[in-house]
Image (cartoon, rainbow, N blue to C red; front, side, top):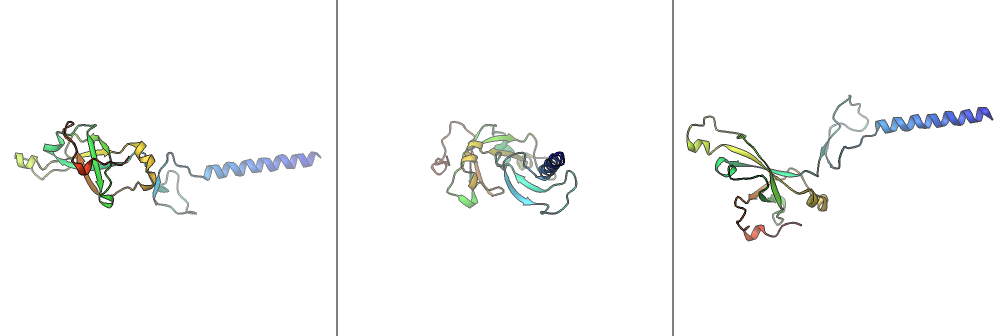
Length: 167
């Protein structure tokens, strides 16, 4: 009877060890997202800290646009934006400006005249609200080109083609 109980305990210890090994070998993402592409395939050995895949965080989706100096200087964080993707031009997406660069992202070779300074381009990000993303998560795609309309005057009305937004 003692040998049988010892065998049961040894089997339980083996099960615990196997379960721990499986848990250690199971990858879990730190957040919800969509796999953009695989870097390593199943069965490949990856070194410690190696990349396995590219995961897109769908909780933080934004559109990056570049504006010339005269317009970038008028944009405020929190300004309303209406991105329209080339792939779905009938959908107007509500967004807000979440970032305006404080330095030009690219410039002409020499910047000496006012005309040349106008060619300075500043990065602006239009962020889509996470609640809206969650409601439409199956349709969210990354990397799509499109056009972003930024309201520079908070009192101005949107043109009619930009008033029917996705909800």
